[in-house]
Image 1: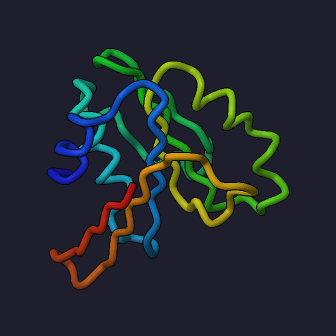
Image 2: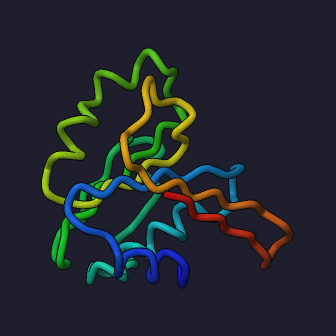
Length: 125
């Protein structure tokens, strides 16, 4: 969460954060940190695995949390991600390998699960 909280300080409207890592690596926990850094209650953040997209408001920017785990690449176009990313907030996308095309200037975050309490996080622009 701390890494997400720190990254949130530098994010502006239209920022896209692509989160990759194995199941249980901590992608949703990272998004909780993003939420907190944006001024949104992190307790509100839940995994959108079944709803696909969660929207959180109340902070300095809205946060859109997208989980593509259950989708095939061909199904992603119907979600309207281009419109969401232009919606005036920050978009965090879990499982970006399912995107049909990259987002320009997206921030890539990879979380590696080392053990129960240890993760390595790499962040690239």
